[in-house]
Length: 452
Image 1: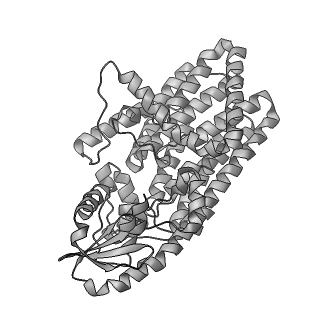
Image 2 (image 1 turned 90 degrees about the vertical axis):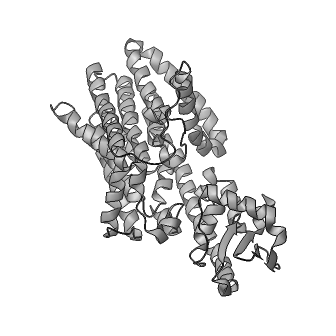
Image 3 (image 1 turned 45 degrees about the vertical axis):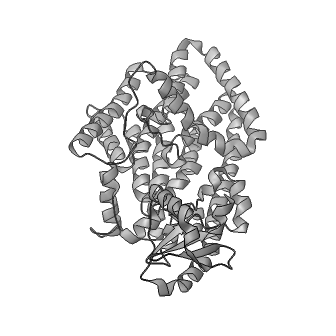
């Protein structure tokens, strides 16, 4: 949480929501996320930034969720191994992107917590599945992808029981999967009654290639995991090869219950995107993939099944994660400090053109101090300054700028490219941008865009 507080900047959709105050999550089928934001903002009309309190509450939810997992797994495996699962739940580089959102992080953290809580409820009670189903239904109304963490936890639990040669009840596994199915059915019924917008809800063609498409979608979801560890290939490749070898050895060693070991691995595998593998449009941003703690714990605990002291190998990925988090924080902080005087300079130069419509063409350049950081950090340290993100940030200084989302900015850029030679260049001697004037509009063209 400390790296995010250090960066303390608006991220992605925040730069639009801070002006519009729109809750809007219900338009994407996330009704409880809107309700959560209303309470968070203490305002029924506008979403309001509550500062550091956002991250404090998000942190409390995640840490409490990790503690619940520790208590649950501590009854199944050893204490040290339970701690590993809890630590990776908190030290999750994918979750860091969720937490960068000032307006949305509490809702997403609550979604993760409810998913963990649903998994941790004992299924021995008669109505346990009702409570679990309700919690998972709430998860879908907060942030849909985090329901898949529930499946991943079930898979991890089944596989660890297999490694420990603990009692595995096939009926119990089936019962634990029922709430997931019920929650999705309830959510689909809700979607019929309360249709949501968005372009990611189209189902893939239900033809003879459906299973191949599902597998391809699931495989693609693991690219971010590979991308995260790719800079450390000198460590990662030997680690993965030896992990697979140990896994195969474990399956042969305890072949009597091998079907449960394989079932656990299959559940973990499909939990990357779960039922969302049926969607035509896939969303593979790290913030929508909750599997990192599951896969990291699986690898470390498989090692420790051979030799208990191997559990301390978890220190290595934790160092990578800490380094990544720090680089994300410093790059966002440096970039915000770098572009602030540039935006202010623009605002003073075009102030007298208040009656004109202002458009931003291209991307504000990255700080020279940030280049090497983003080039050598997975996911470019979650730092992106493309056209719509640049215009959104410039809006703080230029109130009459036309904020446009990605599709609209593409059309505006195309129009400018085809017609800029007919405009008057108002600002020429500047290392970062050029200003062009037409009869009714003003265009800020970022010089850096010419190099892309």
